[in-house]
Image 1 (cartoon, rainbow, N blue to C red):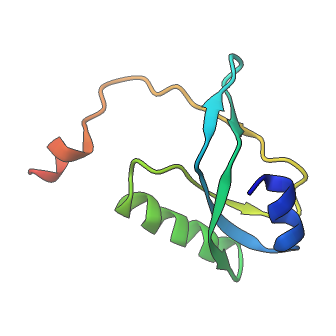
Image 2 (image 1 turned 180 degrees about the vertical axis):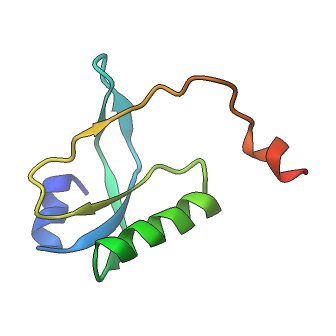
Length: 93
């Protein structure tokens, strides 16, 4: 689904969505193409909590928590500085 379709199907809802097709623009903004609704949440706090659980369980999937009142999803990709361990190396300890 696309964001416009999700907004119609799930009006005024907090959702966990997964980006199935996405890319980063030269200005660092994420463009989300095909999306999947993973879960509906009762409020923003629950959505953030559930997002964290899913992100921890599936670290290589692209989840977001959003409210369908937003006309567009505007996500700026952050550039991480420093050393970052891989998930597999960290799990071995």
